[in-house]
Every structure is written in structure tokens, then in C-alpha cells.
Image (cartoon, rainbow, N blue to C red; front, side, top):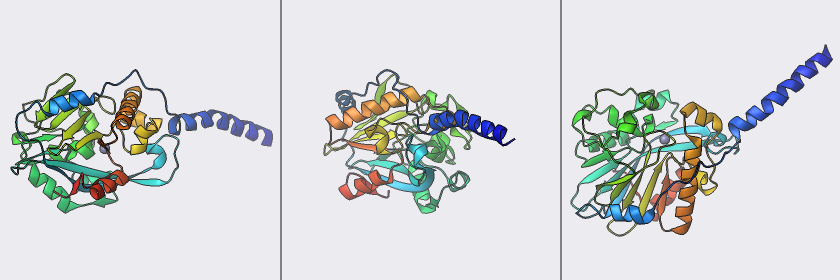
Length: 296
Ligand SMILES: [Zn+2]
């Protein structure tokens, strides 16, 4: 009996150990190469007439928590914060555009948020109506959830792409309601305002895009959305745990190719401010360095 038990246990370990490794530690290989061209981003940033933004502000709306191993395959099981932000590119004439919109308190709490700043979300919500543009990096609740529940969503200057509406389930637990009829349709990249460019980056979701901002003073920010949750994702070209990829329905090879491109870009241009989706250390550095300003 004991022998049989040992055999079952051994079989279990033999089967389970590779699955455990696969689901939580395996990285994988990039699928091809991802073209992210700074010269083209800069050209597009100057395509629209008018002055470029003078500053970029950021509101921390909420904090989610995941084990580090979910964020970075093979890392520790220690819990880590994932801060959820909305951004505001401000122009000298007082106008502004928004990048990402967070989510409301009910959704944040339902997703296990350990922190929610109701006042910050109110400020983001209030900024949506006067905004000259709103874009979201992708169709997940913590980026698109805020704009979708806005009472005047139909009349906002929200530039949503068809791809961001392609898989309504991506937004769960937020439901896609009636949305505006205008769509932002583009092939690879496009300018949406002076100094602001979106660049398609399908992988984390089908509607994912990164957002480039070139300020009037020449400082440049690249909002990665969730191509990378943390800076270490692109520094190590290391994806989330495969388990997370499976739950989210990510194209892992595409994301790894994007991480490799961002790593190369950041190493070739160390002055470029790369902003991963949820890395608290990067936000701390951004506020300390003055290239993001805290609060709308
Ligand atoms: Zn996110």
C-alpha cells in the first residue's frame, strides 16, 4: 500500500513539476520582430500643426496586487503592487488629452484592489468631457473601464479603435454599452494630436496600442500600457507567467517581440522615458524626476 502511495506521489510530482514550471516560470521566445521606430514616432508627433504638450500629469486611481511570479515569469511569490494610473497631456493653452482612464470603485473592489482613490477617479471622470482627446492603451477594465462608464460616453472625444471593441469579453467585468459611432481607424501608427502618437501593438490584447508623447521641451514619453506591467519585463525580455497569458488570452510571442523592441529602443535612447503599465518604482522616479506631474 505504502509502495503504491509512493508510486502515485512520484507520478504526481513527475506530471506536476513540469506543469508548475511551464505555467509559472517558462518565458518563451519572441514571434518575429516588432517594429517600433523612434524616428517615425517623432515624425508623426510633429505632423499635426500646433504646439506640443508642455507637461504630462498622472492620477493614481487604484492599486491591484499580484505575486511577482505572475508579473515576471519565474520570479518570487512575494506580493507586489500594480498601480493603476490615468494620464493627462496638457497644452500651454489649458487644453489637454487623456491617456487611459482607470476604473470605478465597484470594479476596482471586485478585482481585489487594495487601494482606491475616489477623489482621483472623480478628477479623471471630470476631465473626460472637456478633453480634446481620450485614448486608451487597451481594452482591459483598468484602462478602459473608466471611460466606458462615463454618463456622457457617447459625446466624449474618445478615439476608440475597432480592434478595442472586437472582443467585448476583454473588458470583463465591465460591460461594453452603447458607444460613440466614430472610430479611430489606422494601419500601423497615427498622430492624434500635436505631440501625441498611437502605435498599434496587438499581443496583450488585440486592441493594444502604445502611446508616444513628445513635449514642447523635447522630453519624450512612451506609454507601454500592458506590453510590460513592470520595467523588468522589457529589461529582461521576460513575460508574465504563462498562466496569466492563458487567462488573458494573450499572444505571448507577440508580447515578447514587443518587449525585445522596447529594450533595444530604451538602450539606444536612454533619455526616452519608458512607462510600463503598473510599476510603482517607475512612477516614483517619474515624479521625482519631474517628467510626470502628480495629479490632474
Ligand atoms: Zn493594466
